[in-house]
Image (cartoon, rainbow, N blue to C red; front, side, top):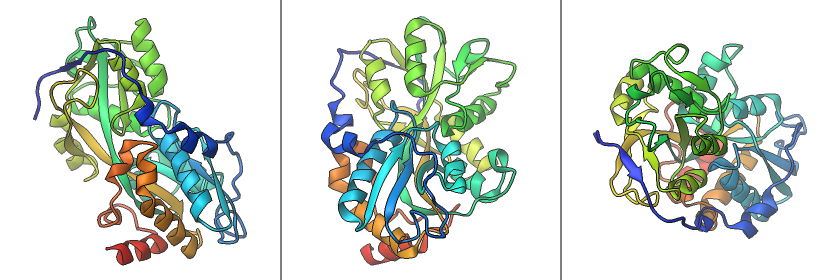
Length: 337
């Protein structure tokens, strides 16, 4: 476990590695309010159409990677187009799948598990969802800047802290981490609910003291903050085990490798959770297989959109213990394995 705080310094670097504009921008459209999902002749019935992919904010990983997924689907799944929705991420994405306003969605493991069990944000009822694969790990990255005096989660007490956008996996994991550190998120911090881009802006202008972000490595918005020379990454790996014991095996201690961000000279111990690509169980089984095949067989193309795609591995992508793998996806994983 790393117990030191990593101060990230260095000159501004180009974030072009995070986005391949020609590949990504062509796949993005306006937010979709009705994707016609849920079967019954909708976009996921196997009869063709446009699939909507629920992603996250533009400063994170879901949105650009979702754009890459849309391009791959358009180019490789016959009779289908795809677009991306900008959303508040995981919780909202599950609700979009439930309503049929999206046919594919990114979500972090803890939120997917809650949706399957019908607990917490899903107390109105368990969702009929399945997994098209474990795509990559999310890393919960608590950040501050020099001058705040914050080097641990405990030192967030009495400070202004963003816990992530409402309805996001960041918010879920951040609140659980604060509690694991002995803080009451309602009483011990001045709580804000900002997306990653807004969190970075608020740290820069001094309206918040710290923030949380759950996303892949590296995250574009944090690359920009690191370029300022005063970003502080706060280690939290020590809380992974107690959180896993209380909530489930989707919390594990992992390190953000050294040099992930400019000037970050040491690895930082944080909490990681798997990112799952989710669909409704009513999606046509052959369509499930075609989508999964297209995405995993075009991994190199997706890496050009975001390096998080390097983690896509058909040998392990179906090993998600807290949600059923979609039968079409499992057919591809069995064949690829």
